[in-house]
Length: 115
Length: 113
Image (tube, rainbow over all chains, first blue to last red):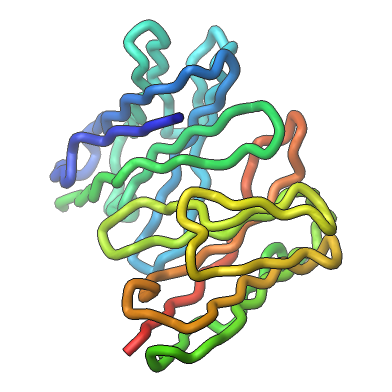
């Protein structure tokens, strides 16, 4: 079974600062994917970034990067130069890459950016 | 493209009533999924489908049924609604294979009273 743990229920950050959201995972799969999603107050799920377990380089997408440490089973999201619009819930998720890629989600971190 | 369309957006049910949440995608994706999100929690998988005519249970299937008669549609049926089914329901689709991206619908907020 797969499990995602997000230990930060809430984070408060000043605008323009960088922020790291923590995510650890547990799986017995050899091949898996790690995802981060953003959920603003409007409720939709917005895909941010993906990291495959065999990818040697950390994934980056604009201001988002994923700090992947396989030995520690961690997949932290780093947001550089935070903006007021980054205030939202952030979910870490994982899936096996075999067959249907069913997502397992963590409980989320509520990020608040202060002006 | 419309992507993944869910209807209705909001619904209030009385205990014991039944309803069907509709989900349609126009991207010819093979995989479709239903998740529920309880307040302050992450999403949990209810049912999924790997193609027309093939469905399987996820983590929390009790009280729900699904069907997949076409590639496009994946309705979720609630029988005998209970207050524990008050949640936000998300449908999602995925091409599969090397394309790992999910497309989520906008969600259905269901309240059972």
